[in-house]
Image 1 (cartoon, rainbow, N blue to C red):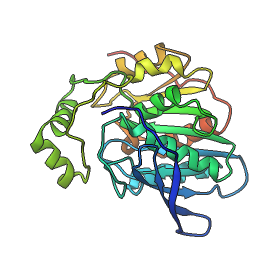
Image 2: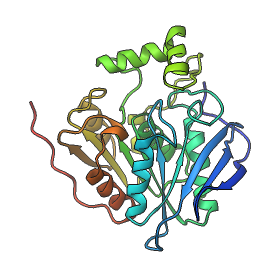
Image 3: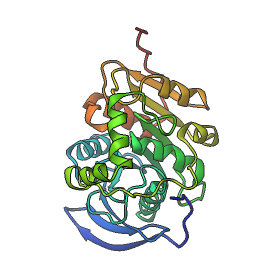
Length: 279
């Protein structure tokens, strides 16, 4: 696997879902078809479009992703959701956070094609690692993010310190696990290991400034303990919200948190949420 890609982004086809909403097939720089959905803002409150990057085994049509999209449009933003390669109706194979940067870049460029001068990105879990790496690597005018929020993101690769992460590594690295991923989770996974190993999330953070950066993490996350968000926030200029009682990623983000994230993405960053007490 490699993060390098060639070729130009373009839209394969676009269809109307509802009045103003569109579903498109985008093509990435490395020629992978990516399904994407655009939901316009209900009123011209802001020119911001929020691009939502889901977690591993998710997709643009998963209920938690659609709920996040509704929460962000309710805060006045247009929203682009999409399925990473190997997920949902997109083509290709999942590289578990490496070449997915190209998928996000295609979605950001589509948002700008639709007329949005300001595009913010928010990612959950694997998607959180992707928005961080994208903000560090894609500084092009059309592909850049103007604000970035990473929710439940890992700080470093190959983490196996929790039981859920050991199970995930089995799914990704073993033939039987990839079969479970394909038929149990509808996620098609690349069998080849990373070569070279991509820039890690914590290595990406110092390269993001001056783009505003928000790190959000639950104090009951079963995948990544609190040293991950603290490491990310400590690596650069970032705002850190540690959420009391929250679990992992989009499924654990309640409506109140999504509304706060939406406000942060569409307006000036607000104050940090208080850090929970240490055990």
